[in-house]
Image (cartoon, rainbow, N blue to C red; front, side):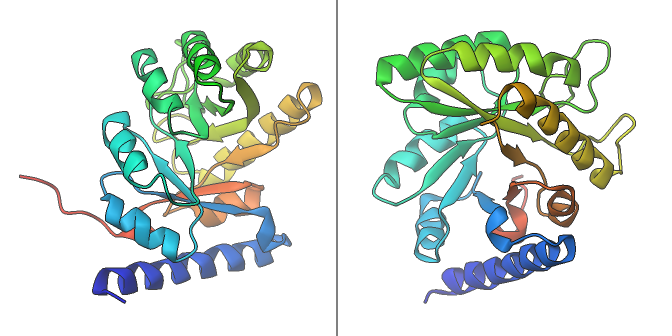
Length: 239
């Protein structure tokens, strides 16, 4: 093993231990939680090593980085998640490699993804990004739609060809009533998921929790956690 692969293996083992412990504490089976490794800013060589170490789900947040990386890793048995704010003019590119878009937060994006997925003969899993810090604008600081906008957007996804409504995603907010209250934020997302599943029973994915707060997300009931720095390390800032 290379030094880098050893490092990744060690970090992955620690994260796996954290998830397993959190599941045990919550009375959940480990199989109920899927680890998604967020590989943004890291090279395709790291993605390849992660695949060799058994990782099956990876995530990216910028299409200009993700597209060439996904192409370079096309031979690997990976499921790709797009988790960043997505411009409609990038929909065609993202549909080319992403299996899931976790950051669906407006009608125009649904329409663009649907059109491009149909053209490509693909079906893309969509998660509605929920902004728990949404103010009067109904939008969050880091994207997302406020809780009041979920039902309408979910209906549009469910009715559109080429896309599939799979659930909800959130990022723990830095402002508003849930700032610093990650467990409460993730519990709120679970309540919203319960509401959504009344009209869309198949929308069972709940993506929440990152390196710093994955335990709170597992405790609340998240089905997917998105972990970057705890697996890959922290890259030094440029400049």
